[in-house]
Structures are given as structure tokens and as C-alpha cells.
Length: 93
DNA sequence: TGCTTGACTTACG
DNA sequence: CCGTAAGCCAAGC
Image 1 (cartoon, rainbow, N blue to C red):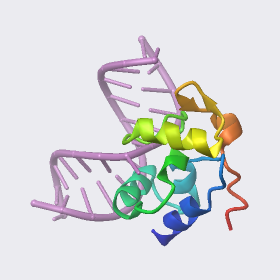
Image 2 (cartoon, rainbow, N blue to C red):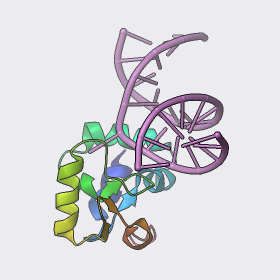
Image 3 (spheres, chains in turn blue, red, brown):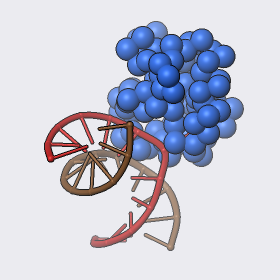
């Protein structure tokens, strides 16, 4: 699960990653990513991790939007513009 | 070992 | 846009 923490910690400012994307990188299911975040997500920019449709994580959605705005993440209304805000998965190394 | 649950995803209506 | 269903992997009981 260090993988997940490492990846989330490396997400560049103004970019985001979906649970599914992280799940692909760590070769596991999206639900595990969420579960890991709930347990070890402390201290990580969890607000840069959104769902595949661009909606913020299930908790602190208002907080997430606020932080994303501060990060300069391409927001479209109350959700993230995934097309532009999805971080390159090959560069987080 | 088997069932339930969850910061999820995709597809349908 | 919202609700429902099936698939998914791991933890907890």
C-alpha cells in the first residue's frame, strides 16, 4: 500500500488521479485504494484523488473542492475536468 | 470457509 | 442527473 501513498503524494499540483488509475498502477481493485486511503491516507493530498467521473471523494466533498481550487485544478462547476486535470501516470516515478 | 461491506467503475433505464 | 445492478479486491466477523 506504500505504492498508493507514494503515488498520491507525487500527484502534481493542479492535477488529479482517479481511484481506478491508482488501482491500475498498484495492480489492485479501486475499492482497495479507497480503503487504503481511509486508513493510511492521513497526510496525503487525498483531495487530488477523485472518482472516474470527476466528483471528489465521498467524504469532505466541499473541502475537496476548496483545496482543488487552491491547487488550480481545472474544475468544471462542482466536479473536476478529468480530461484536463488527469495527471500523467508515467511521471510520478 | 463463507457472507457482508466499502473513500470504486461501467453500463442501462 | 439519479437510481439500480453486476464486477471488482481485501478486510472483518
